[in-house]
Image (tube, rainbow, N blue to C red):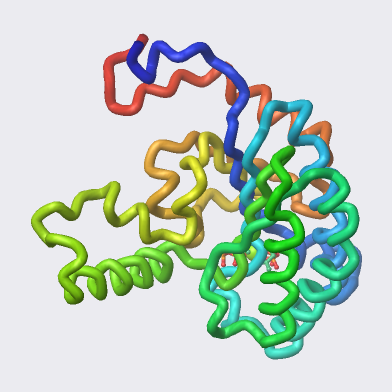
Length: 241
Ligand code: IPE
Ligand code: IPE
Ligand code: MG
């Protein structure tokens, strides 16, 4: 059976670019961080909707390698929010069988945050209900560059023959090496671009760009978007089935 003969089902891996927090706050005459807090509160509802929708893997874009360009106040407010979020949500994540992983470069993140991330990964390592991956200081180009560096080291050490290097070899060095590629990538807030998210992994992903600002994105809308995926015809380069 070729890939395009596969029965149409819900996407096993959904990735979300959670965009629009700033505009959501602005519309209410509030500071941007108010929008980020509202956005963070949305995450639990979406994660908890996954099992019933058949979504085993959920990957969310929380902070990009480019987001450091924002004001120092916004960046440090976001970092504080991430620390607080992990501390407060840990119990619910553990109890609900959510396995949490983080992707992105940890080198620029503060020590306390990195410790909390490591702990949460460890505490949820035996869970299997939903695999939640949080992209934090993540950029697709940065990830490919870091993967290439590690691969080059193995080649230099004589552990990998450069002649055998192919796409699968490189994929093993990516932050996402244990995850399947996303079937569906959703971006909220009306922008139709990928902003350096999962560049390699989304080569054949389906995209949904929706106008809703992230803090307004409900489980009902998530369910509708996931449902519309089942009507798509994925061809992976082959002829229509
Ligand atoms: C997404 O919301 C969250 C992060 C990038 C951290 P934004 O902060 O980008 O919100 P807008 O796009 O300015 O509305
Ligand atoms: C992408 O949103 C990053 C996250 C959602 C974390 P941005 O708001 O940073 O993207 P651009 O700047 O509009 O492309
Ligand atoms: Mg934005």
